[in-house]
Each structure stands twice: as C-alpha cells, then as structure tokens.
Length: 377
Image (cartoon, rainbow, N blue to C red; front, side, top):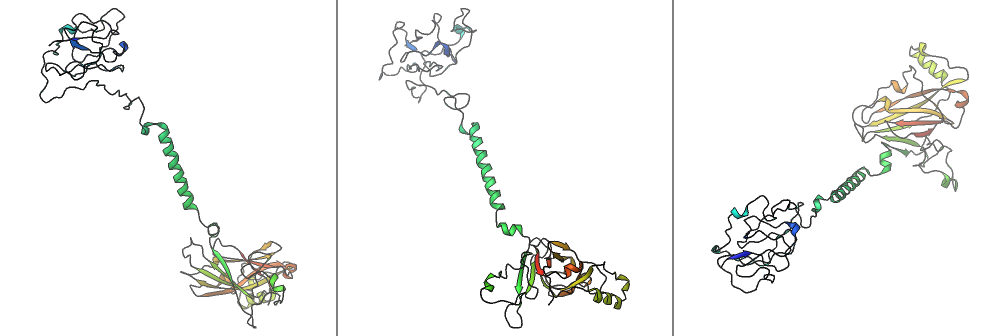
C-alpha cells in the first residue's frame, strides 16, 4: 500500500507531489510537529486527518517501515518509512522560493520509499524515537566537562601549591638551637686538694652556695666567668667541618701581670734581644700560659684557638713576639697530643691591677665565646 508525506499544519505547504528525498530534514525555524502527528499516512487518508497518534498493536506492513511519531523537540530529524534521517536544506525563503526545494529539484531525486521489503532479521523501529541533542561541547545541554572548566584547574593549582609549601616548611623545620650553633662548648670541673670542687673565692658554705651559678652557667657571660683553677673548656667542631667529632680541651693558667723582665731575659738568652721593645710608659707586657689537647683527624691548626684580654668590655688582642715560648710558635699536635705556650698582651698598668679582667676564648670556627677570669694563682 502506498504512503504519502503528510506535513503538519504549522509547516509551509509542500509542492504538489513532494516526497522528501534521502537526507532531507525540516527547517528548525518551522517548529516541531504537534505531538503524535504522523508524517506518513496511507495515500487513501485525506489531508489533515492524521493528527491522531499511531494506533498501537497494528501489524507492520512489509513494504515500508512503521509509522513514526515526530518528536516534539526542535531540530529533530524527520523519519521516513525506511528509518533514515535527513538534514534540513538551508536557504532564504523570503524571496518566495519553496522551503521544500532550496536549490535542488526534489522531483528528480529518487524516492525509494514505497513497496520496499524490510531487511531480513531487522526489527521495526520503535515508535517515538528521538535523537540525543549533542552540542559542540560534546555534552548534553552544552555543558563542558569538569576537567575543561577553568575553576577546576584553579583549585588543583592551589592544592598543589599548598602541598609544596607544607613540604618545604616540614623539611626546613627542626631544632632552632641546633641551627643557631655550629659547634658546642662545654666545661668540666677539676678538684682541689681537699677533693671538693673549688671556686675563685676559695669556696663558701651555707646559704651562700645556693646563690652561686651552676657549673653549666659559669663562663657563658662576661659577668659570670669561669674559674681557671676549677674549670677546663671543651670546644666541639661544627657539624659542617671536615671532622665534626674533633675537640679542643683548653686550660687557662696563672696570669703573670707584669712580664717585662722575664720576657726581656727570655729574648736575650735565645739570641733575640733585637726583638725586645720597651713597652710605652704606663704599660706592661702581661702573659698567660695556655695548654690545648686536640682530638680529631689530622693535625691541629694554631688558628683554631683564639684568646683575647677584656676589661670593662674593652678588648686587647695578643701581641706576636718572637719568643720561642709563644703559643703560635709551637708545633701543633695531632689527635691526643698537647700544645703549650704563652699568649702575651700589652696592657695598661691600671688594667694589670684590675680584678675584673677576663679572657674571651674561642675554639675552631663559629663557636660561642667562653669567658675565664684573668687571675694569678
């Protein structure tokens, strides 16, 4: 039985005898066909009488595909009896040209829609078929995927930056005290003849002992110097040195406040009288013996130990004389060895009589200073 194309009343009237060719679609501007409208009807049915929905349960005709209801959405393809979809022709209809024939003579196009047999094994198309409206963005409704949204990658960047900052802070953290000190300084006490720990004043008893600073605190400031008769200083090398386990054990001896006579005799006896220089009026040479035991790799350098004379915050550096007993002229030891010699200072007679004199001692490089009383004993 022949079928006839039946456009809905809201579409422009087609040319007489028009049958949509393969690939034809209505112009989206025409709007959707009424719900349930049948685009293909039997040739015997009058025009405009096919507005009802297709009858359910009717057997399909073997000569053409089942009647389809046109979807109500705009731009839905018109289904022909073979189940093929078509694309709408583009064209300007304002000039009066037929919207069904945009630069193409459809009358000459083949219309193989009638008296065709259904392919063996093929199932009829389901009524009410409607294609998915996929936009250019590749997602229904025109929405971009989350991974293509600008805010998605902004959040990812902020999270990564926070993680990097957290890792850097964690790696750079640690004990502030160990970072601020490249080496350590400790002291140890010696015992006097009575087998008890002594002090610069000869010791005290009762409540006076409670007011005295602890051994760990003595020597850490100029106002709280260590006692050379009781304490020895141990300097530990920096963790960044060639030998971070190296140590210097330093002992400060009894001060010779006016060493002018003994130093002049020493230079004369050694044939170096030419090196003697009389001190300026009101000044004297003061000497203090220092001994160092080195423990570590290789040989100790004389530059690893420095001693300054300090009175009321004013510093005097040692003189470099040609005496064979000066510390700087001694052969420096290797691990377990010992070096002994004098540090000589040119000071005023007034400072030589001061009871507030201190020695500022440093071992290795970058260590904290340690302070010892300058005293005779």
